[in-house]
Image (tube, rainbow, N blue to C red; front, side):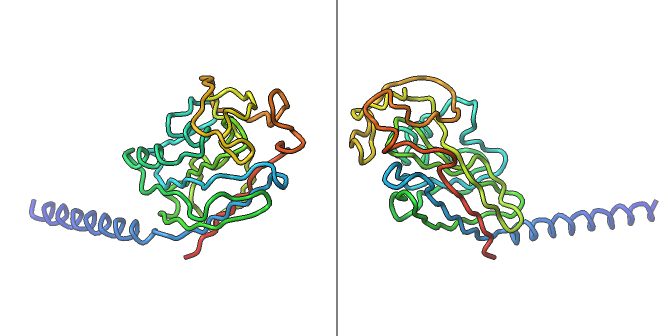
Length: 222
């Protein structure tokens, strides 16, 4: 009996040491990642709004193709307004941090670089930025895992489905039009964006694009 008690005690100590080591390893997995967003749209067509970054675990989900855009995602996609989502998402279980990238919009053909911190192999990065000369087009990352040395990703434009693509200047916030916070509600799911089609007042030759609209490079710094 005494031998059994000693064996149980030894096993308990071993489990405790393993848990402590795991906790220490978890904290040591914190890494810094450099994220560069390059605007691939044709010159003068579609500036990208200051991106919103969310670092989170797999417990949180901010947006996904095929889902309804929540209020915060719609605010970014329609008006480049990060505030509602930035303030709300930090209340979700699993979200470590959320912030708007500094430095203003990203013009066509240009890049901006930002830094995020997260646990390698555990945390994920979600990113949203609006194509501002549209009704509700955006691009970004949906729960991209922070793993390895990083990745180079080419991203298409998505349609938030929250506003009709009427292409009328009175509903578009960007420099082409200057009319934020005016809505033409739609109520569809997030999907691939068809581009500027010429159904309204926007000239596809000026404001349109083909292929990916952003190149997002993630690099582990340490």
